[in-house]
Length: 613
Image (cartoon, rainbow, N blue to C red; front, top):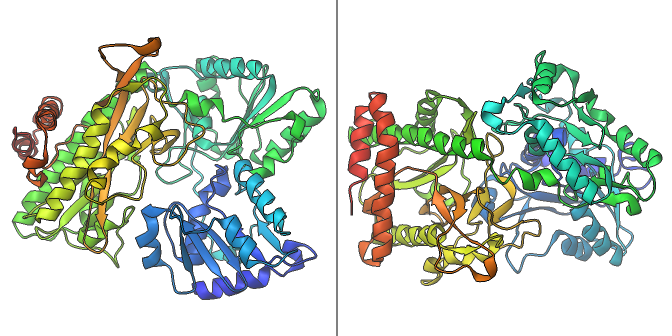
């Protein structure tokens, strides 16, 4: 079925009583799935791709009889333009002239129009302001029980993964699930919450020290969970539970009961009926309106999930695991870049796809390797200007000595998650490419070397990374940093460094792990990004204003930067000293692994790439 036919059928279904009720709907929202809902979240990207062709990981579509619009952020402007047909209009989210979805609907629909949505795919926090805005324009926001894209999709819809849950032992988790649940119960008592409902998959995996394989690259599993002062319940299909699950929880020192996945609504409804009206039911505002709407307003507590905050601060075992995982991962990257440089010099054909495959092979040979943490962004020349580019057979380009090569990749290990970007040129970069690279580095160094007060929110630091680019009128359309999980999601909220306001950011605290990844992208020509994972550590400052404590960052990624990409005259003495010290650290930590593995060519490459500048 063509995508034009898909749009046509969706518009017809928007008028069918069987699906939308007695009155037709005049617009349908196909959400980005920020509600973090298990099985629904898993198909959000696929639904978007099915209806529009856009394969990015973030975007919200609105379809009316006359329009099909896609809102997405700056990471995906070029990609969406390339992938979507002329039937679609790209709405560049974050650009001041782009209307919000609510504003656009208000201006393009008549009064008394009905806007349909899947209540499992719009969060509580998204729903409330959207509903208020539309009601002020005389427009109704209507929950549609059956997802209308799924009605069109029907038999073409691919099967979802349904792998078993995997217990994660104390060797990797560092803290038992009994201890974690105890901490949750303490926070519940402080807020008078009799029941808490967990809907975010990584929250549930972390809380119970379990991992899964239901969503590509993310070691999570479809489930819900509830905790009260006397119970802990996992709502999950029984087929996912391995025989050792009971032994796992016995070892963890906690009693967990199991209920069917879809019983979560019954649980919430029962709690509403059984609890006192003064008791609270805690469901994060990031959860779907389908669940929060089951709880009366006076009983509903929508603060951010306590686990979302707890897991951002890594315990001692997780800290060690993250550090060790990045050292091992660096050895694979050194092998890859050494191999790539040799193959290109010999004139052997290596493409974006075959290069990414080779890198995955090197990683798969490492201890504790589970899989990739995201699809490798292996991008040459103009493809590298597409911020979240993913090569396919129709776009696959050879990696040569004529163009910049950007490689953003990562892996899941049992003891940690990695994410690293390096930009190299195997020939002679232009002066502008070198200046752009140098200024991107200067922004990364400004973040890496800054000292800041304890619990400062990340958005206060974002300007530091952009200033070297702003100085010459350049910028980049993505955040500077995201949190990262420990054998969990490679993008872990709610921490990060970005120009956006992040209301749930608890502020920087010791043993948080984040990316540091400024970039610059010249449309149609090249892209540059430098990304290290950094750890928040206490800083040694001359003073300690009001005893609040000061922090800084420490590099966890240990992969060399290509020094020929620097314009040395633009670097300060402090920046040059940092490069040399960083490269010495790379050689000290990664060299022995390459030596032990008899990877002599990679070791020689590392020794050469870490020479002082």
